[in-house]
Length: 192
Image (cartoon, rainbow, N blue to C red; front, side, top):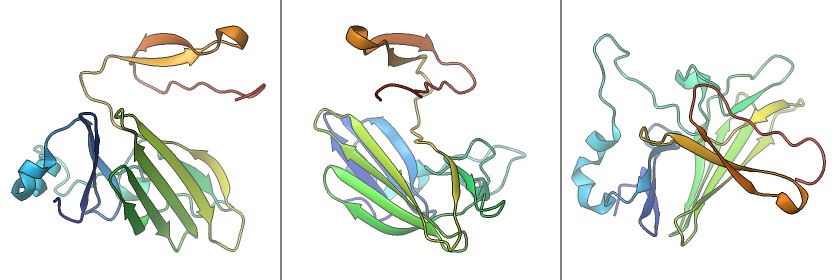
């Protein structure tokens, strides 16, 4: 059994490993089953990243929320504010629920008055379903601008697939090379 700070969902040769030792859910691995049970004693070394020369001495993994408050300089998973305040929350895990196919985390930032949850479900086929929510626990309104789901992809991945079309030609697959930047498909009319 893995230490209590490391959780794994496993199905059909696919493994999702999440490390919570930093106080936030960090996806350490998503892909082919690596046999986590065999590496009990080596987990701290396996889950830590090497520190390159002339870099930060203690790098922080930004986790699934991609928080700027944890030193992540990219696009955060949660964007919003409360009248110009509370725009850079730092979530700490409040509750964890885990069974063989489901893993969920509830995290909060009490000073920002926000609570977020993320849930992972591993289907028998190895497909991972992700759902997220935000709860405003503060006294004033919170302007939620964006809530993104983040999953790591392997370095050897070269293309993405999504679906396009309408009416009888819905869900037509289209592939494209992975490039820098963001690929977004917005639906602002019709059924979604």
